[in-house]
Length: 222
Image 1 (tube, rainbow, N blue to C red):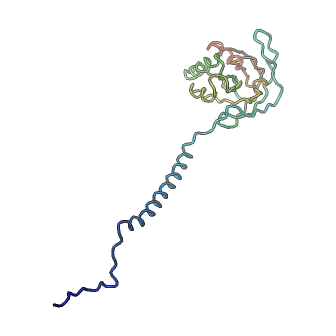
Image 2 (image 1 turned 120 degrees about the vertical axis):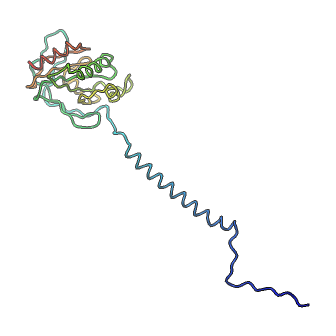
Image 3 (image 1 turned 180 degrees about the vertical axis):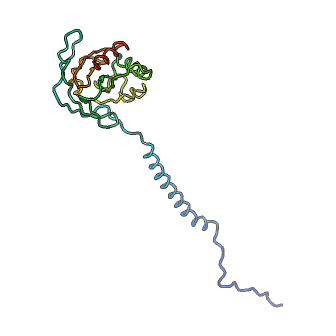
């Protein structure tokens, strides 16, 4: 009885890799793909973060003064600064844009406010409402945020004024309240009525009524 013959396995035929071997080959590729996706995600995240970044605001800023300072204002006394030219103030807004308060141009009211001052907190929304209703025509209004103190209530002033829909151009005073001192500020809120020729028409402090503010505007127009 002859022995069964077996066919020799062709030399070019190879066994398929085992499951374990396939796993060893696929795993590095998967890890590489995941890593690449993670890098792409980080890059996209950085790009989106940069696009969505909110402009940085500064609560105080450098103020440059040109011209003689006004005398400190004392309510109820004859105002020695009436008729004198206002000093020029050069500074910046909360967003860092240049702003100048100077003689010349239309009659204006310069109002100084402090974020922690309760009278300022009451006056600001009133001014916003009066302007919206068209009840303060005939003079421009420009503001100075001064007396800034991070340890006191209602900080920061930029957020406070934004909440109140305050669109009036506003200069940031420095940490020494240089702008306020140049205009003779003694209490908050503080108003300086300025004529078209750049001279002081009248000054006032405290929470003003609409009639009182209109009287200041009338003085600036006179």
